[in-house]
Length: 305
Ligand code: URA
Ligand code: SF4
Image (cartoon, rainbow, N blue to C red; front, side):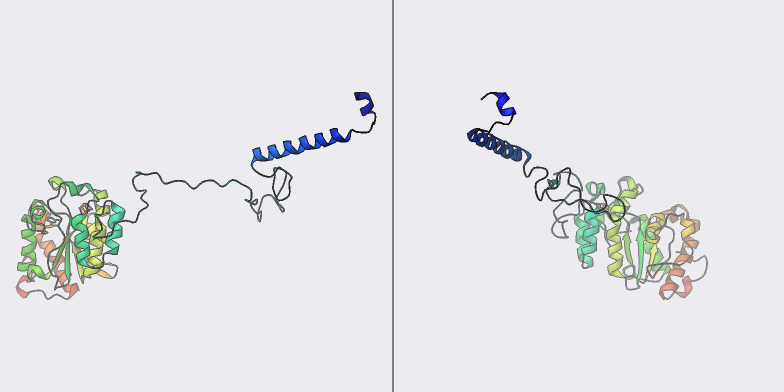
């Protein structure tokens, strides 16, 4: 058949017409497979031309339907990235606290003082664990209801595992026994840090932030009637402020409904004995506030231990 005839309205050959239709259908199916689904414009498939009903933007605009969109795969957690642990944090007894979040979790979950003590004994959450000999947790039975909080263990405390047993500790023991007229066991003694900083350097902000959930849980469980933080580091932590020692001491604060009477650290008093008098005033205020009887002969000014 020549083209002129066809173009001018000749009857189509039915066989050719069928072949053309079949080729068209095959092409359609192939394109559909390539695009992974229905073609634009087909029923139920929003193609680029299919607009969602309603306003496209502005207040009250609905997001376009998500049907037919490929779903982005969920991100896979990267193994080995610090802090990106998906497994539950170890409880006391399951493993050591290895970072600040572990300390928080273990301290919060500790049901009694022994669990806190065991958590501290295993703790590797800061670098001080590498140089300690012993952790230093607590001394005393606290019959008086008064709790002293020091800064951090020194050499003697690191060796023995008992707080305040070195030179500064001897002065604290004198304050308790000769000044307050109590047995050392009648007060509780703990520290902000449970491990000794090398060379007795100051605790770093990171070390304090990491370790203090242990102390906070200790205080929660012991429920002392009064807290006497010793020195600037302990006072700032207990009061939750940054301030100079002289701005904090000399009065009764109330923290979480509990009286707090900050005073000088015994190590400071060894270097500045003239301030013992001031310390003794603070201790008497603390005793009075907690209802601990002040021994008569020690009550006068200038009778500091
Ligand atoms: N100084 C402290 O602050 N704590 C101790 O346990 C000993 C010395
Ligand atoms: Fe753990 Fe505190 Fe010792 Fe650091 S100082 S290892 S946080 S117990």
